[in-house]
Image 1 (cartoon, rainbow, N blue to C red):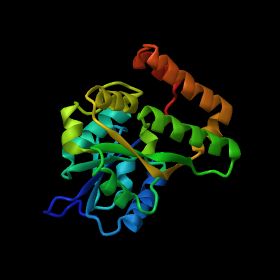
Image 2: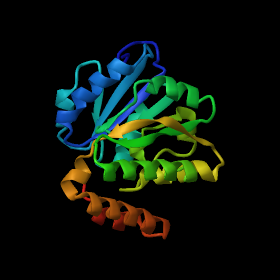
Image 3: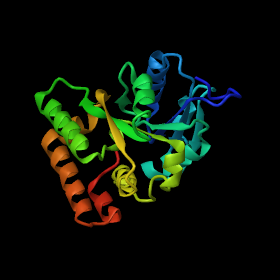
Image 4: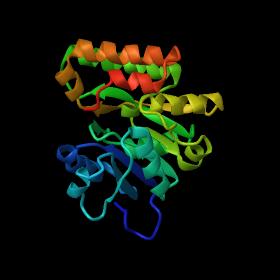
Length: 233
């Protein structure tokens, strides 16, 4: 990790958090394990005004507080990033073993991309959900935020970053790229997302809610209304 080094890293990993003290250290350890010698920095952006998750960070990791909401938090992290490549990583997402190499290779094909989706659970229903999500993102070229979106910093800034909306900021960013005919690469390898939300809310209820919110967003319902149906964890 090179958060405090003078030379700029090759990859800036931006992690938006809210009450993630239990998950942030294992995530940082896993990033160090799979980094393959690639110089990177980590920027953790806390949506809690008290910065409760930041107290868990080691000194080499940058931490800051930003207004709650993944879009504003990730934008704040991107403005501090020093690398030419940005990786937006949710705190409950585990990258595959060769993620850093995959990102480098993918960016030779397109200036933005993401991974296939996997859910870290043996349940067949969740495996099916993750497979459908991967098919959808490959067909539409609109991956979600939990698929570990990566993008060249210059491209991210050129499209204005994440829009200032309370939900669907990941979809809106991908739509902005597509409107400008900027290609989006989907890596075949999978990230593993924690099943905690499905387990807490119920698999059927959580899945139907997510699909309904997406459909209503495409029909023009404002994110400010949609956020009422999506409770932060």
